[in-house]
Figure 1: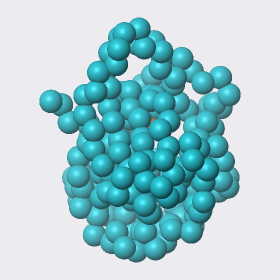
Figure 2: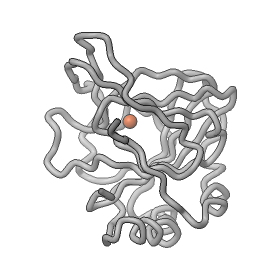
Figure 3: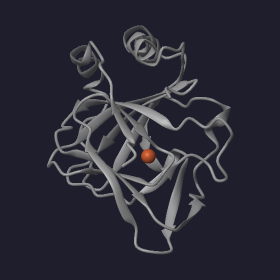
Length: 196
Ligand SMILES: [Fe+2]
């Protein structure tokens, strides 16, 4: 089976958890909210200083921060599967995300599917290529994301509990479930060039 996720050693996980733990508090069940950090934010600077070196050690490449987001997911949330990005896909789209647990990630499961499908743009998602957005909490639908319409029964390809730093593939159908009865938070960081 092709693997859609790779473990990565991030040396200062405790510091990362500590730094980001208050960015997201309580979220309603079924809801996902995000905070995206602008490239000139203190959080972006912190990520470059504290996370980027481990990523470069892992990949053997030099990277720049592409985008950094804290995802908060309400307790017992089972959102629909989706594909990140645009349709049609942009050339050089970033397809790997480094996801680092912040809190309540013990039962946060990412699942990947395949099957005959059609992708549709979510109409109200703005084109974020122009740059980063304010450091305020907002709805996940403000991210570029494609809705899936299955033409047959979807088939589960792979799944993983993201309870440690994990590089995950986001350009194929995936779903993130929070089975835990608490608000879950992860930090998701993407880089240019891509990690793989
Ligand atoms: Fe996604």
